[in-house]
Amino acid sequence: MEQEDEELASTRLSLELGNVGIQSSPCSSSSSGAGQQPPQSSAAVTGYGLSRPRHMLTEAEKEAKRLRRVLANRESARQTILRRQAIRDELARKVADLASQNENMKKEKDMVLEQYLTLKETNKQLKQQAHHLSLSFL
Figure (cartoon, rainbow, N blue to C red):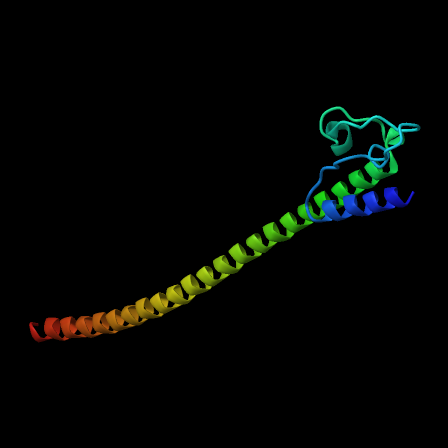
């Protein structure tokens, strides 16, 4: 029982460190031949390929699967966080670009409005001059 606890702790530690395989089942490393289960293939233990139903797994294998699932969920959550961060950064960049474009367009609008008012005043003066010239020829 103590050996099983040590192997379970070792398996848990190796899984938490990113090593998702199990090297041996708790019963396969004991030296006595009585009551020993045959070693399981890594495909059955790791969930790749053919696997046994959950009720036929040893406690260590169930724990290994649970830890793999936890690690996979953590990785998925990490990827989601990174993806959201990238989206947020991209949106912040777009906001800055659009704010800059908006500022430039406001400046351009003000310049065009100023040119328009100048041209309008010039046109008014030219019309007055043309009117005065036409009166002087009469």
